[in-house]
Length: 546
Image 1 (cartoon, one colour):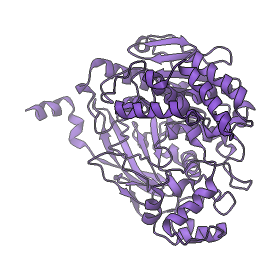
Image 2 (spheres, one colour):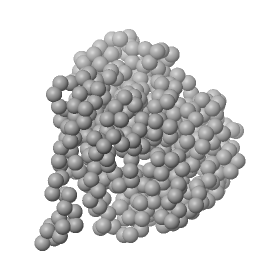
Image 3 (cartoon, one colour):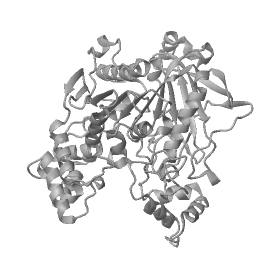
């Protein structure tokens, strides 16, 4: 009986999965019709090739544009992802990991035959540059389809396939970023056939996807391919986004595969050796390393980045487009899921203060490390971390995300419009977080679950009204930005604010996203200024990250 009433309310669902054909320069594509939770129809075109399969001699190489096809491409399935280190999709989702993975998805709320011109939001997934996926059951676009934008999400290579580098032109690195770049070029050449406006492209991403967004802002290769950007919990200044000992890692991977591999082998010999192994073996060997991230490339025609990230920001060399940056209120509360285990971590920090120092400070002297470590702990507590567990959690949140992202916002605001938010709403959708005295509760990636449909949040009606309202507000801010470059626009009644002040170098306003939206000032001011003082006093310049 409930199914009968459901069909009365949403009669269009009788036609779910109806097919539709779009003609592009490379060939015809068959998509299907889907429906959002509220019965809004949209069209899904999945697993469209934008690059040739990066296999054989193309492994560890920059992507090559896809070739045309004959007949009609079936774009109604979404079951493939790039090789990665763990199954981050969760139980019950087992898509095919494959080296042939360079595909993208297009989701549009408009019938492509109607010749519309909708803004486009190009999404880049996170996963620490070693994981990530755009599968329909993991990053479903259903919520976004109710806001009048087209969504494009792109697969890019991760782990060694995307970020291995020999530090020279044999394997220069950054192939994952170059995959994203080719996806953006595909949008410019094809999105009009799906009803999109190629002049209104906003790139957005979370975690490593957010860092990727800011790498795209840094590279001149992507200039003109988008007009705005959103980075959720990630920046090129975040220390974990940059690979320093890449050549050692490349040779270490080879030794993992074959302990007799010659450490004095040439880069070309290393490339040929790794290309001779199956993708499964390369991926398995890399699982013990987890060290594959972007690099600074040598100068060559296809180089994506060739200079330090910090210098690009402070010298105004980033693309000057409007930017939203944000963090969750306690990014690394995950570290304290097991409170007793985390107490052991706090004791370890107290007993060896050099553990508090990031590689990006370039401090080598052992005695100085103890001095600098003590100065860093002083930013958070006058005593020991074991006595202030919440402050230890805050240290991890700041050193991985908060400090660098706030610094990025301040420096970038000299050259372009920058908006900043903190996601503080502790709702039911992400699940229960541990209570740690002195720490907040909203963890890394929690905000993303108010944007994308996944297995645990496919029906918002099962959640409190506050969760639904927060999702609507968050989606409104982002899609307004994509449409008009004004995140508030005309939605003041829903949002409860009339404007969102921009960051300036001397005036740090930010939007606190909680049960209400509130404009606040000087997020983490004392901690941030403490870090700035530590860097200025002790860190060795030039910086690459912060």
